[in-house]
Image (cartoon, rainbow, N blue to C red):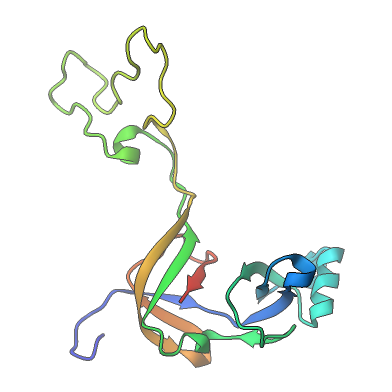
Length: 191
Protein backbone atom coordinates (compact mmCIF):
# COMPACT_ATOMS: atom_id res chain seq x y z
CA UNK A 1 0.00 0.00 0.00
CA UNK A 2 1.20 3.52 -0.77
CA UNK A 3 1.53 6.30 1.80
CA UNK A 4 -1.96 7.61 0.95
CA UNK A 5 -3.49 4.11 1.36
CA UNK A 6 -3.81 3.11 -2.32
CA UNK A 7 -3.32 -0.54 -3.30
CA UNK A 8 -0.38 -0.66 -5.76
CA UNK A 9 0.18 -3.86 -7.79
CA UNK A 10 3.83 -4.86 -7.62
CA UNK A 11 6.30 -7.66 -8.27
CA UNK A 12 8.79 -8.90 -5.66
CA UNK A 13 12.23 -9.71 -7.10
CA UNK A 14 15.12 -11.34 -5.26
CA UNK A 15 18.26 -9.40 -6.15
CA UNK A 16 21.47 -11.11 -5.15
CA UNK A 17 23.67 -11.37 -3.39
CA UNK A 18 25.68 -11.63 -6.60
CA UNK A 19 29.40 -12.48 -6.44
CA UNK A 20 32.09 -11.21 -8.81
CA UNK A 21 33.41 -14.39 -10.48
CA UNK A 22 35.58 -12.73 -13.16
CA UNK A 23 36.88 -9.26 -13.95
CA UNK A 24 37.35 -8.75 -17.71
CA UNK A 25 40.01 -6.20 -18.67
CA UNK A 26 40.84 -4.33 -21.84
CA UNK A 27 44.38 -5.78 -22.02
CA UNK A 28 43.44 -9.43 -21.52
CA UNK A 29 39.89 -9.73 -22.92
CA UNK A 30 39.57 -6.74 -25.26
CA UNK A 31 36.75 -5.14 -23.27
CA UNK A 32 35.91 -4.23 -19.69
CA UNK A 33 33.14 -6.07 -17.85
CA UNK A 34 32.25 -7.85 -14.64
CA UNK A 35 31.00 -11.42 -14.57
CA UNK A 36 28.54 -11.96 -11.73
CA UNK A 37 27.32 -15.28 -10.34
CA UNK A 38 23.96 -15.83 -8.67
CA UNK A 39 22.48 -18.69 -6.63
CA UNK A 40 24.71 -21.47 -5.25
CA UNK A 41 24.71 -24.95 -6.74
CA UNK A 42 26.20 -28.23 -5.57
CA UNK A 43 29.75 -29.05 -6.56
CA UNK A 44 28.70 -32.48 -7.88
CA UNK A 45 26.50 -30.69 -10.47
CA UNK A 46 29.40 -28.48 -11.62
CA UNK A 47 31.79 -29.40 -14.44
CA UNK A 48 35.55 -29.50 -13.78
CA UNK A 49 36.26 -26.34 -15.85
CA UNK A 50 33.53 -24.49 -13.94
CA UNK A 51 34.94 -25.71 -10.63
CA UNK A 52 38.34 -24.28 -11.55
CA UNK A 53 36.75 -21.00 -12.64
CA UNK A 54 34.92 -20.58 -9.32
CA UNK A 55 37.93 -21.78 -7.27
CA UNK A 56 40.07 -19.05 -8.88
CA UNK A 57 37.51 -16.48 -7.74
CA UNK A 58 37.38 -18.10 -4.31
CA UNK A 59 33.60 -18.58 -4.32
CA UNK A 60 31.16 -21.48 -4.23
CA UNK A 61 29.83 -22.72 -7.62
CA UNK A 62 27.01 -20.56 -8.98
CA UNK A 63 23.96 -21.59 -10.99
CA UNK A 64 23.65 -18.50 -13.20
CA UNK A 65 26.40 -16.27 -14.67
CA UNK A 66 25.96 -12.94 -16.42
CA UNK A 67 28.28 -10.18 -17.68
CA UNK A 68 27.74 -6.47 -17.11
CA UNK A 69 29.56 -3.50 -18.59
CA UNK A 70 29.76 -0.06 -16.99
CA UNK A 71 30.73 -1.05 -13.43
CA UNK A 72 33.51 0.93 -11.78
CA UNK A 73 36.91 -0.78 -11.51
CA UNK A 74 36.85 -0.94 -7.70
CA UNK A 75 35.34 -4.46 -7.68
CA UNK A 76 37.67 -7.43 -7.20
CA UNK A 77 37.21 -11.21 -7.45
CA UNK A 78 34.90 -12.53 -4.74
CA UNK A 79 33.26 -9.16 -3.96
CA UNK A 80 29.55 -9.29 -3.18
CA UNK A 81 27.01 -7.03 -4.87
CA UNK A 82 23.68 -6.72 -3.05
CA UNK A 83 20.36 -4.96 -3.55
CA UNK A 84 21.86 -1.96 -1.67
CA UNK A 85 23.25 -0.73 -5.02
CA UNK A 86 19.68 0.28 -5.94
CA UNK A 87 19.34 2.66 -2.97
CA UNK A 88 18.09 6.01 -4.23
CA UNK A 89 17.16 4.62 -7.67
CA UNK A 90 13.64 5.62 -8.70
CA UNK A 91 13.17 3.59 -11.92
CA UNK A 92 14.72 0.37 -13.26
CA UNK A 93 14.60 -1.62 -16.51
CA UNK A 94 13.99 -5.37 -16.29
CA UNK A 95 15.11 -7.85 -18.96
CA UNK A 96 13.80 -11.42 -19.04
CA UNK A 97 12.57 -14.23 -21.27
CA UNK A 98 8.81 -14.10 -21.78
CA UNK A 99 6.61 -17.12 -21.17
CA UNK A 100 6.45 -19.48 -24.14
CA UNK A 101 2.93 -19.87 -25.56
CA UNK A 102 3.62 -22.53 -28.20
CA UNK A 103 2.31 -22.49 -31.76
CA UNK A 104 -0.40 -19.85 -32.11
CA UNK A 105 -2.58 -18.61 -34.95
CA UNK A 106 -2.73 -15.12 -36.40
CA UNK A 107 -5.65 -13.95 -34.28
CA UNK A 108 -3.79 -14.53 -31.01
CA UNK A 109 -0.24 -13.92 -32.29
CA UNK A 110 -0.77 -10.74 -34.36
CA UNK A 111 -4.25 -9.56 -33.38
CA UNK A 112 -5.96 -10.30 -36.72
CA UNK A 113 -9.74 -9.91 -36.56
CA UNK A 114 -10.68 -13.11 -38.35
CA UNK A 115 -13.94 -13.04 -40.28
CA UNK A 116 -16.14 -13.70 -37.26
CA UNK A 117 -19.83 -14.19 -38.11
CA UNK A 118 -19.55 -12.55 -41.56
CA UNK A 119 -18.33 -15.62 -43.35
CA UNK A 120 -17.61 -14.23 -46.84
CA UNK A 121 -18.34 -17.63 -48.27
CA UNK A 122 -16.29 -19.52 -45.66
CA UNK A 123 -17.97 -22.08 -43.47
CA UNK A 124 -15.12 -23.26 -41.19
CA UNK A 125 -12.29 -20.73 -41.37
CA UNK A 126 -13.31 -17.93 -39.01
CA UNK A 127 -9.82 -17.48 -37.42
CA UNK A 128 -7.60 -18.13 -40.45
CA UNK A 129 -5.30 -15.50 -42.01
CA UNK A 130 -7.00 -15.47 -45.43
CA UNK A 131 -5.18 -15.00 -48.75
CA UNK A 132 -1.39 -14.83 -48.49
CA UNK A 133 0.51 -13.96 -51.64
CA UNK A 134 0.17 -11.62 -54.57
CA UNK A 135 -0.74 -12.72 -58.11
CA UNK A 136 1.33 -14.81 -60.53
CA UNK A 137 3.96 -12.13 -60.06
CA UNK A 138 5.89 -12.34 -57.70
CA UNK A 139 4.50 -15.91 -57.18
CA UNK A 140 5.71 -16.07 -53.61
CA UNK A 141 4.99 -14.86 -50.09
CA UNK A 142 7.31 -12.07 -48.95
CA UNK A 143 9.59 -12.65 -45.92
CA UNK A 144 8.30 -11.11 -42.69
CA UNK A 145 4.65 -11.80 -43.51
CA UNK A 146 2.67 -12.13 -40.29
CA UNK A 147 1.70 -15.78 -40.17
CA UNK A 148 0.99 -18.42 -37.49
CA UNK A 149 4.02 -19.67 -35.54
CA UNK A 150 5.74 -20.05 -32.20
CA UNK A 151 4.86 -17.25 -29.81
CA UNK A 152 6.64 -16.09 -26.66
CA UNK A 153 9.97 -17.34 -25.34
CA UNK A 154 11.70 -14.15 -26.51
CA UNK A 155 13.91 -11.68 -24.66
CA UNK A 156 11.77 -8.78 -23.49
CA UNK A 157 12.88 -5.51 -21.86
CA UNK A 158 10.34 -3.63 -19.75
CA UNK A 159 11.39 -0.01 -19.30
CA UNK A 160 10.95 2.42 -16.40
CA UNK A 161 9.41 0.28 -13.68
CA UNK A 162 9.02 2.34 -10.50
CA UNK A 163 10.93 1.03 -7.48
CA UNK A 164 8.41 0.99 -4.62
CA UNK A 165 10.55 -0.46 -1.84
CA UNK A 166 13.89 -2.12 -1.14
CA UNK A 167 14.21 -4.71 1.63
CA UNK A 168 18.00 -5.09 2.11
CA UNK A 169 17.91 -7.74 4.85
CA UNK A 170 16.15 -10.19 2.46
CA UNK A 171 17.74 -8.85 -0.78
CA UNK A 172 14.31 -8.00 -2.20
CA UNK A 173 13.19 -5.18 -4.46
CA UNK A 174 9.53 -4.32 -5.12
CA UNK A 175 8.75 -2.81 -8.52
CA UNK A 176 5.41 -1.48 -9.72
CA UNK A 177 3.81 -3.57 -12.45
CA UNK A 178 4.65 -6.86 -14.11
CA UNK A 179 7.89 -8.30 -15.44
CA UNK A 180 8.58 -10.82 -18.25
CA UNK A 181 8.97 -14.52 -17.55
CA UNK A 182 7.59 -17.28 -15.37
CA UNK A 183 7.91 -17.51 -11.60
CA UNK A 184 11.48 -18.34 -10.57
CA UNK A 185 12.98 -17.16 -13.88
CA UNK A 186 16.29 -15.27 -14.03
CA UNK A 187 16.20 -11.56 -14.77
CA UNK A 188 18.60 -8.73 -15.45
CA UNK A 189 17.87 -5.44 -13.71
CA UNK A 190 19.42 -2.20 -15.00
CA UNK A 191 19.51 1.24 -13.38
